[in-house]
Image 1 (spheres, rainbow, N blue to C red):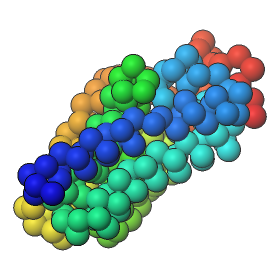
Image 2 (cartoon, rainbow, N blue to C red):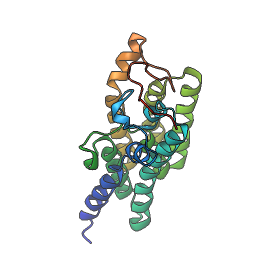
Image 3 (cartoon, rainbow, N blue to C red):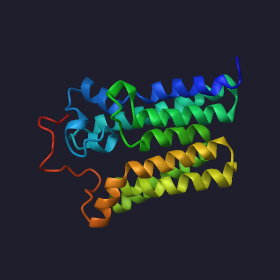
Image 4 (cartoon, rainbow, N blue to C red):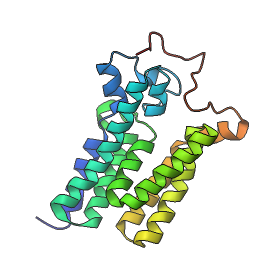
Length: 210
């Protein structure tokens, strides 16, 4: 196969895999409201938690993370090329943000990014997840935790892997993640951001229990 074509094929496959939104799939299977219809209207684990079903939120988190990891793992397993693996991971992340299967209306990519990081370098992945957990558990702001983790990830990748394709992929993911959180940043600065697990009284789903 043409070596120039391999990253393209990996990216297309990664994008299609990333386009599967587990927030929407899990909610449909568990007969929960569409996560795009309540709360932040973001199809992600944090918003699914607002439905009242912790199981659905956990399944969403696991699924969105697994697809990012699997895209990287499969590309690496088939090619042994870090550039191809990075392309597949970045594409999976982009697929989550703009999924072709869901009219290009996707989530913010935190779980998928974590999966990609674990696939590229488990040390960066574990460190980034730990950073997110520390901020989220102590301050109870999922968005703030994601933003701090987004800053940590490319720095950790640079120190552990240098200026290669994985670093560039992580840097692009971090920039996109921060951009997708621009509304959250405004609410954080205004003191209006809901804390982790909070349910907005004016936009809570009806019949959204487990």
